[in-house]
Length: 72
Image (cartoon, rainbow, N blue to C red; front, side, top):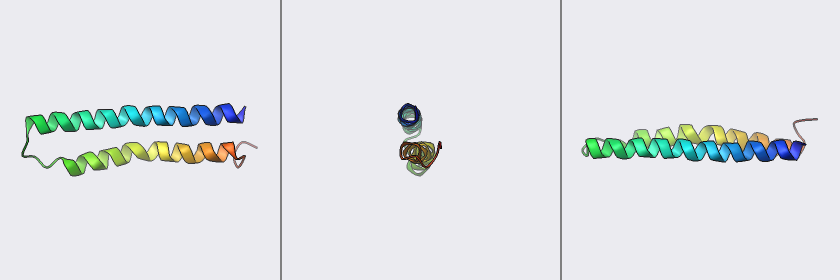
């Protein structure tokens, strides 16, 4: 049962990160089209870093569940 929980956790983390990254990057492209002279690359990288933080934490918990550190 823990294997299924870890697989669901890792799969949903990857799915959520891909959706979040797509939304951040699409808004970045919209902003670049509207104002090409704006410096938007830094905030875009920061936004992607914030979006990627939760899946990294979820992967860590998934690995802990897989190896039995959690869930006993």
